[in-house]
Amino acid sequence: MTTDTRWSSLLYGNKSQDSGIVEMEELPVPQNIKISNITCDSFKICWDMEPRVKERITHYFIDLNKKENKNSNKFKHKDVPTKLVAKAVPLPMTVRGHWFLSPRTEYTVAVQTASKQTDGDYAVSEWSEIIEFTTADYSTVHLTQLLEKAEVIAGRMLRFSVFYRNQNKEYFDQAREVHGNRMLPAVKDNSGSHGSPISGKLEGLYFSCNTEFNTGKPPQDSPYGRTRFEIQAETLFNPKTNLYFGDFYCMYTAYHYVILVLAPQGSPGDDFCKARLQALDVTNNHFLTCTLDEEAGDGALVFRHAQDVILEVIYTDPVDLVLGTVAEISGHQLMSLSTVNAKKDPSCKTCNISVGR
Image 1 (cartoon, helix red, strand yellow):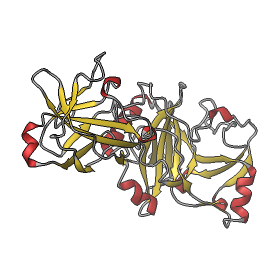
Image 2 (image 1 turned 45 degrees about the horizontal axis):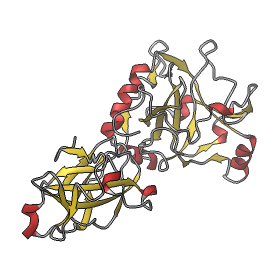
Image 3 (image 1 turned 180 degrees about the vertical axis):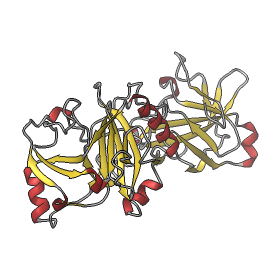
Image 4 (image 1 turned 180 degrees about the horizontal axis):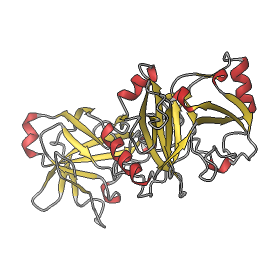
């Protein structure tokens, strides 16, 4: 349901082509259509109407399509069972519904005005011009819903001591020879939730921190290459670093992934995340913590990660190779486990929310 009007679908059954809807020149074609207040699953629409015929208009017909379908033949009413019908209400009018609107998606929309007749048929105007718009990313409200779902399955916290990043040997050679011995942030790919506000926008470096349960050390296999950079956790994650929740998803498997962002306070990455993501308490959350070692009493930090989800940690600043070590792992490159541009399973009840996918 929309907050402003009640929607139904146009269900035409097997009516003949010339029954059910009658075109009448007297009804005005909507002009100067404007789309505003766009979210990931709603928008407001308004247009200019001639005052003299407002009282005759009882309904609006909305033709909403994903942009890739805009060149298909304009539908005939009798052939399309799911176009939107709204009772005429004061404009602007809100269109809301996660069952037909997805985040970050290009749409086209056209409008007819209609007058319901005493026999139940409709008199309609011609179609308006076609307007294009793009739905928005998840808001912080939607990300909070994802966060709460992720917290349910995160599991207990295990200690760790290093972040690590796997790539092929050529990647590290280029970092040394071309980038001044530094790994430079790159724009995040489109893996994860379709509505994620960081995909294709946030720049950073992917790191892992998950450990093997039996050894407490990083695994010797990786999907991303057999050359590994390891860095002490405190170098990237400390009281001068802010932590943000970025996403929660799966890829049609039993594994679930949580994307976290580590941003040095006051950095461009930190400013980006403050406006879009849910900040986490670095000392007390379900995924990744940095706390003082109370037993040691010497100011040392203790780091823990969630056991039951795979953490993908994005660090938003360049990292100098001199701050860690580069070595070859003894295991295999398991390409099938790569999450590069991985699409989220839209049917998983564990990691989806009701605002598109």
